[in-house]
Image 1 (tube, rainbow, N blue to C red):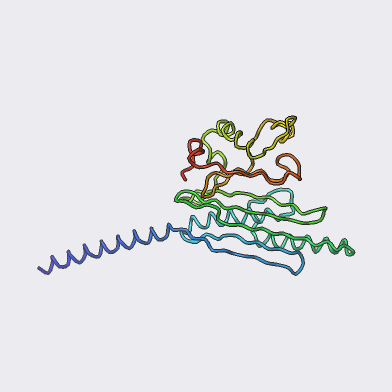
Image 2: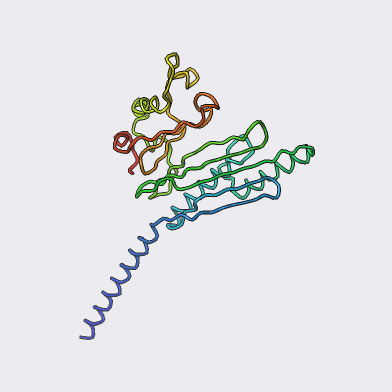
Length: 249
């Protein structure tokens, strides 16, 4: 009788341990995002806001490292991207560059500004899309702004490349072109698609993102046509685009 009780208690203990492990793993796999802001106005005007992932340690660390490194390189004054540059180092570097500029041109009233705003644009069981709106003004007639989409595999935290998103890029480009032509209407009788691509054939944008309505295709300023054209953006519903997508939504 005593031995049976011990065996029963051991079984219960094992079951409780398994339940605890399974519950812990489930809780650990849940990702949440907290808004994080960096502000510095003593010299250059720097404001950076971005969503910081929390939850599964390995996945959240991978996502946060990719986001922070991307933001760091957005204000990196070097011509080459630095995959090891931290956000703190980049902020200090941008501020120091402005201080050096003021020392060299003490009569200048030019202020340098870096404004980076990021948010979770789309999140599903498999995919996370972060949109980054970057604005830099380091002199000139006007500042420069552009939007970037960072797409992540939610299970692994890996930053996805275009080949991770599309089954066949050529097929997707042919599928997208009519949507582009509709979005850029009206086109004059003398104007062709090639005129918007500086004489080249129709091209997909650098940025492909996601929202609750579908797949976003966004051409930044200067990517097509002229500065006056502004940003060209349109969304293709998921039910239309799904056959061309490799990533699960």
